[in-house]
Image (cartoon, rainbow, N blue to C red; front, side, top):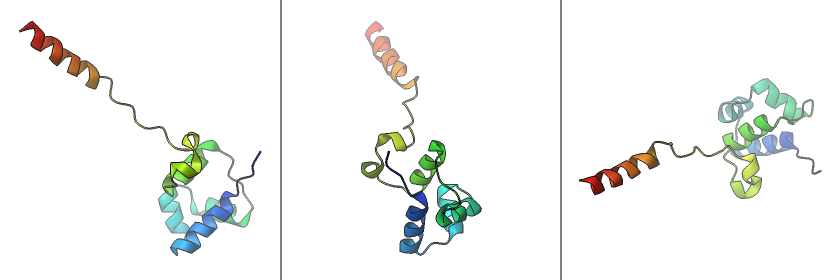
Length: 94
């Protein structure tokens, strides 16, 4: 299994973007203390939900993460399709 070093990722993103840990916390939804421990190696990011939150907050392209590490797209509302069908059926009945 490939080891993902999310602490180094966060540190590099912060340095490149001249961001503070507080800024990263606002972007990612992860707490500043957690990000601090992550960057220092005290904590590891292993929870898939937190990984998705981090990657989504940083707007990491899907080409780099793959679809499994991105939040699910919102499905089309179930009433949209039937409404169109009702219009078609209704216009045929007239």
